[in-house]
Length: 237
Image (cartoon, rainbow, N blue to C red; front, top):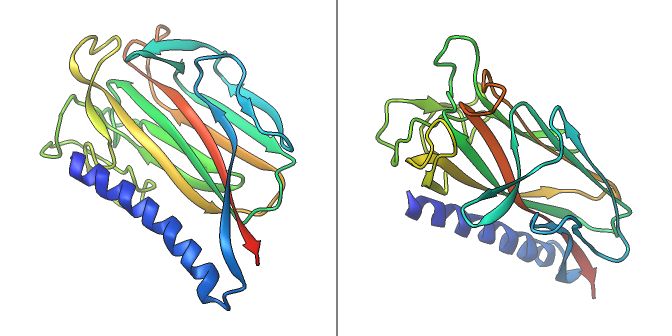
């Protein structure tokens, strides 16, 4: 599982390198790619890092009040049930790609591909009008991929079925409520998406549609940490 996560990390790094090389191959009119972090929020403080020249417009919480949650030695944004957040960044300087990174924590008993027969527990991730994830996730506390349960993640629902823990970076974190203090009760997914983008405005939607979590979110919930946005810009010689 951990070797698989390392391979995915190396693949993302390779993707960035390929982009840089491509800038040169197609006419060699560019010899450098500038990288700039325009937004970074660890949720340890109430105010995010705001880079000069960019207006961090707002964060909207959908069906969930703003709250903070101590977990695994850090403060996360959450816990949430349905809905999520939309982060808008305006006035971005000219660029060619954006990279969005964040830590997604899946707490307690997510039920994947509709084990109750009434739909999936779904993670949602959108950049502007593009849906990158509408993906079911399951957690039965299984610590490897030799499990009977299935999910669509990291694929969008309908585009593939995968075993539990596919695309997961850590499956052995402690549960919060339904699986409280049990190993495997929480899963960590490190989302890292490189995306062609040139607009001066950016909208990031991170959300979920999970069923029957209970008023105290004990059966299932999710939280978010370390949201980071980076631009990559072709620099002329």
